[in-house]
Image (cartoon, rainbow, N blue to C red; front, top):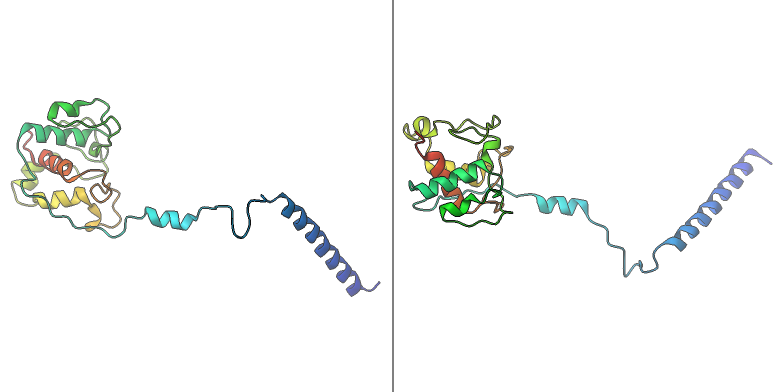
Length: 185
């Protein structure tokens, strides 16, 4: 037998073996899966694309957002210091939140006076009132926007996108701004 004949015979043998293997595989396929009724397979790219936030959004702070009353400032402090409502202290300040409500947990990344933790990833917000508010370096609209959607001036930020994702609503962000702007002497 010539070399080319041996190669052809080997190739035919492989094709035959492949056909038998595929026939065996076909027998083990779910009979309900047909061309008209395929087995569902997730589209990973579609899932990833649906998780994207889209473009950063610009928000306008509501009128009378920044308040000086104790309840607003204390709610802001609660949002800043707690990830969730485990202690259920929110009811003391005029708002009821379910135990499953996720708050900002800003203290995980930011430092501020009398905080329950010490964040060192984000900017230090200690003495914010004295350094930024009194000098006019920052206004409430700027802080509101940074909390609502911080991607507006930094597309690569690691800060949570709160209003766009509905993690927080406008009222909760206003309470946070009120707390950050409060003179904590």
